Image (cartoon, rainbow, N blue to C red):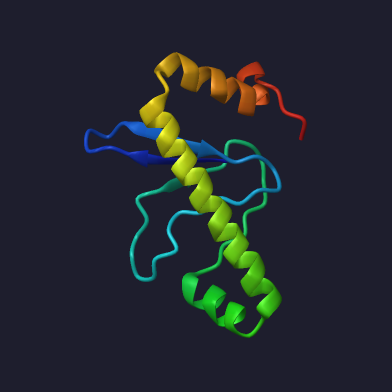
Length: 112
């Protein structure tokens, strides 16, 4: 899958690609629409949960609460790293990093 945004001119900008057995999220803010779009670029299963139900389940299940907190923490770290790379790296270095992280997307093949 990929997550992307659409700028004011209607152009798409990829935020990240999501490999199998990973999570993709738009926004966890309740009652707010997310600026993030999600597209499946290969056949996949997608499970969707709304914020209220996730919070209700987490409040009654400490193990899930810990898992969910870890998931949010990792997602936040990935977002900060993405922003840092956008600021620090030039286009060539960002592309080389992309090739390193997602070689199957460049080759047009998948191990799935």
